[in-house]
Structure formats: structure tokens, C-alpha cells
Image (cartoon, rainbow, N blue to C red; front, side, top):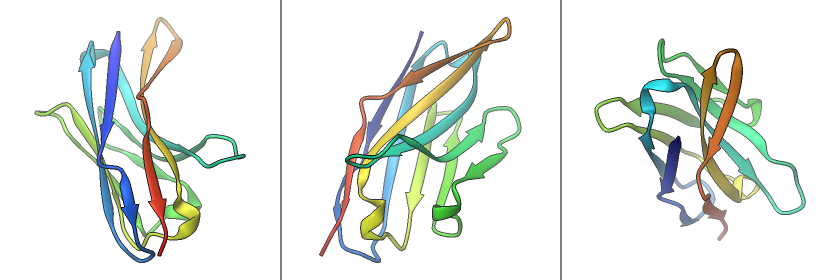
Length: 120
């Protein structure tokens, strides 16, 4: 079992910055990838960014490239999402996810979500 717990959401003005943190507990040695997803009202959940635990390879949605960065601190078992130049369309609930592969099957563990609101 793996348990991600997000923190750091809140209200920010357009153009501002915010950093989300996700502390992961449990069988962390089995995690192959960590990711941030978001879901706005009336929309489907979408990938924002992800990072592999082995090589640190990152992947970003086109809508956030150049504005968001994802990083991890292995010593703290924590993954971060730094969000800069925030736009109102970034408003959503952000979810941290941990992907575990066991004998070819991928299991996804989700955090409870953190609300990010970008508004003046």
C-alpha cells in the first residue's frame, strides 16, 4: 500500500506562484512514477506532470510547459509541483498519484486532492 498526502493548495492571484507538496508513505520502494493530475469542475481529470523515480525523467502537459516544474526529494519521500505564472484556467483540484507496477500490472494510488484557485 502507498499513501500520497497533498499540501500547499490555496488562493493565488493570476501571475502568482504556488508550490504543492506530496508526502508519500507506505511501500515507497515499489513506486515507479509519481504524478500530479488536476480536475476542474465539469472536466475530466488530466495529467499535469509526472516524474519517474529511477531516472527522474519528467513529462508535462502542453498547457503547463514552461510554467510548472516537478521535482522529488527521495530523502523526504516527497514530490513537489512548483507552479509559476498561474492563470485562472489552472484553477482545479490537484491530485498527487503514485504508480506501482507489480508483475506487469499498474496500480495507482491517489491523494485526497488540494484545491488551487487562481483569481483576482
